[in-house]
Image 1 (tube, rainbow, N blue to C red):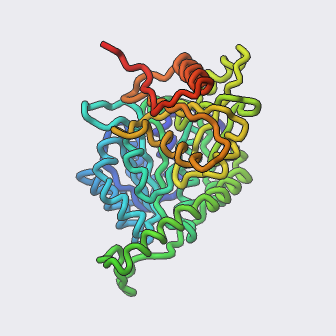
Image 2: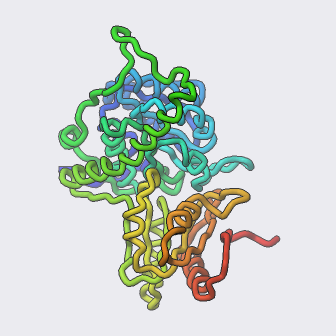
Image 3: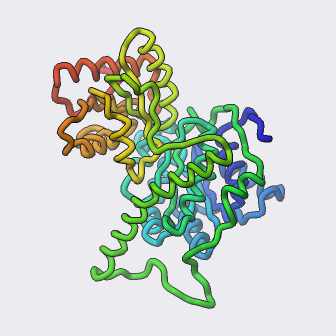
Length: 392
């Protein structure tokens, strides 16, 4: 019977990768992801995990090695952060278009310059359109569970796409939390041995990712798009299977005290739990505030999102990334686009906050909720507002 243990979340993610019985790990260190691959190297060196551990010379090579390993039928894994993810940009498109079912942990960190090692979502949002399934954890237990689920989603023959599991750098990755690690027998029931649908085989040679002329290129992109959209159905099945075995349920969009709420905070990642505390405080004061958080970012779960906001008069969207010269942040942009053709839609107040690790406290969430309520009442036209910017 699994019991909770106090563990650093990065170490817990490594243990989840071990439980998934991966065949190949490609690794390059970058803060704040390094503890994950360091611990995996120890597990392999100590014989606790029978896998090939490949130290590479860059993040570009790390993802390239993982793509190659998965292409020949291995269950492959890697992890990265920030500038490392940016260096992988080219290969991320290769992985999805070649239908490579690998899993990568992205420990979210701000992109330079100036050099910043703290958390925001600018790294993964720069990879928004790369064709990967993208999931967000709000705590350590979710980081473990989503890692196991990611392999099953990626490897499903109806998907065959890479999956990125996002967790916030330092404020989640380096925090010690009570984690329940499932036992190996249960994981093996949930996640069967990988049987590749497509693979490179010297005895049956084929080309993968070769030259694509205009006569075939658009069909490849359409195929990836259909598989990515279809992955939500597979994710729902995986989450049900996971819940049946482990008792923890997951949905693409989760609500917290949303019933009867006129204002909904919209969050992603570990800030969600702080925002929940803010909601508790505001509810105690009689304010009709609730919260929804988006777990499945790609593909975007439109149906579930619309259902979650159906009673709200105002959405206070909290973005931890900026679209420079645009309309604010990528999540706000997505939501505004999704609501554009709705005849009855809530007012959307778009906030960009927490960049470069700036604290998002209970008081800051209360401030954003109050501003959203005020703007909604006046129907003030706003592109977005950056929270906490010093005037001098």
